[in-house]
Image (cartoon, rainbow, N blue to C red; front, side, top):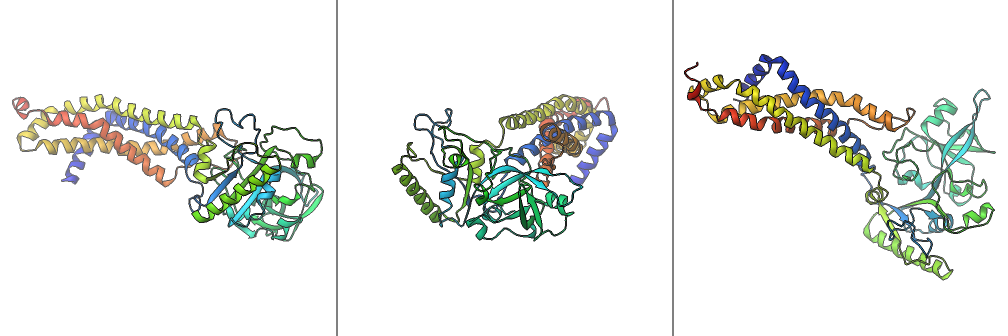
Length: 439
């Protein structure tokens, strides 16, 4: 019976090709817009590391000015980064499975051949645990040894593109790279890696590509690394670089991996003890306000999903609803024009239920065709959104993944149902006797 209804629905669509095309285009427009913005929202709102997002915690401490909060709009929130001195002190804890302090800077890299010019490379100054914390994949080699975390050693990890630029993509482990005024030995090369969003440091462009080179944190003082990320401060300090490191300015991010609730409780107690000791030294004058944010809570706190994205998502879905409602009149006119034919079918024994299902299947067939066209049309629309919001040199961020494609088809079927349920109900309610004389 289903095959019969589908055959009748297909014949009905072929009988009025212009009107059928108009119905398909109406559904396709709504699906294209809604699918594109659903895909954009899904990209920025999805869990970037689902395998361990409940085990990774961003650490914040409230070392801010006792006379006013860090954020006037959210006075209970601590600063979103740590001071250098606190970050270094927290690295002394042995409780986390892994942990790292880190910040972003820019350093000059000198290619091995004179034909190529030096270039500035976005740099992550960090500890070796960074790579294990965030599951950064290696193409060659691996992270540097523990000794480089204890004292500065001239070692570096390159990303895939920088290794391609410097060594033509070959295995460069053990080779030398000149960075600023020192030669560094390559210990590893990352495979292509683009976490979406860049959740480990959303303060500095949430959707930019990861850094090009990674150097040990202990080089901060000897090479006087200056952060190229966000810095907040409330207390003046001296002119020397060491004065900045000992200041109350916050510019260092800190992550810890805690595998279970007991480990987390132990670490929270350790942090409370650390702050207590600092209070005795005259610091941390504000009430105790340590926070451990898991990945999802952290991204919510920093509002990784812009309000404009949520607004456009709602508008796109409303556009689909409007498109579906506008098609009700067209379908109603089309179905009512077929009243004499339906009257004869009813007189020959067709039930209201069969007439209703046949016309509803016709609407769903329109929805399915419109969904297929709309999903294809969403691809250039999504590309246009990305070109308007991101640099052309950045890797592609917005993609129509399989779940989004499935969601687009489901939305199309729902749109067909919304557009067709009333016209199908009206046509099945027509009494057959009214059309028997004419036929």
